[in-house]
Image (cartoon, rainbow, N blue to C red):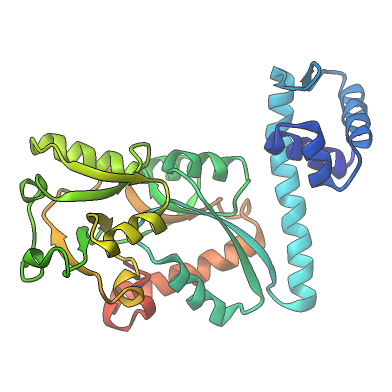
Amino acid sequence: MDIKQLIYLCNLERERHFGRAAEASFVSQPTLSMRLKNLERELGVPLINRSNNFAGFTAEGERVLDWAREIVSVYQGLKLEVESLKHGVNGTLRIGVVPQCSLALAALLKSVNQQFPQLDYRVAVLSADQLLEALLSHTIDVGIGFFELATLSGLQFQAQPLIDRGVELIFNPDFFAQYSQLPHLSLTALATVPLCLAEPTRYFRRYLDAQFRDAGVTPRVVLESSSIFQLMQAVHCGLGCALSPVGHLLPGMMPSLHAVPLDISPMARYGAVAIAGPGRATPLAQRFFDAARAAIIAATANPASATGGFAS
């Protein structure tokens, strides 16, 4: 058994296709298939259900995958550690983030970049449930989104909670001037407001829908989208208004938009930045987490000095 066989196995899990897994592994498909068959012979158990196409993993394969993910993660962490010893902290950090969270990610990355200017980032947009699964399977290094903190603690993840500063209505006063002078809005006041919201499968949307149900309000949703960019374009054009956790950069990016706080109960889950536990997180992820935690704590202690408002 060698590390490449385990990498091939992890790539096959991610791609769910022999040809794409071979491309991701930079080998031919026959080579990948041969190396995985050699691994099965060496272990003495079938790992992959084979037909004309990839048909999933056997029960034994799933158990081996658990070990393979851990070993590959440690191996990649070792390579990054050696590179950082030679050239300083550098490499690509894989970050998973929910579409709407009480943190301006770009501003946080900019803050960390001042300490680690050679660090690059690859950001994937995931649902709250996908985020936890991606952390467990080591397909991302850092998760930023909504979690049950007790679950993170039980799984021995490191987490830096984010302050919940509530929810606000975002609107273009050229079309919704009646909200410009209000200090806050109630849920019942939104009954007639055309809303542009994320799709119902997202945690933040599920939270909003539950709040509307509890208040006996049936919202008028004129646009649903998985794309926050599309939602904000709709708000800018006056198609409707959006709801978002406080902490975004929209006022600075789009001065034409205004926001008013919403009277609403806090979310059951907490916003947090999470990585694997000490000793299990890659050195790159640990350095990022330590720098991010320090920046978030500093911004929380002194919100007026927080660059970009990333601490929400």
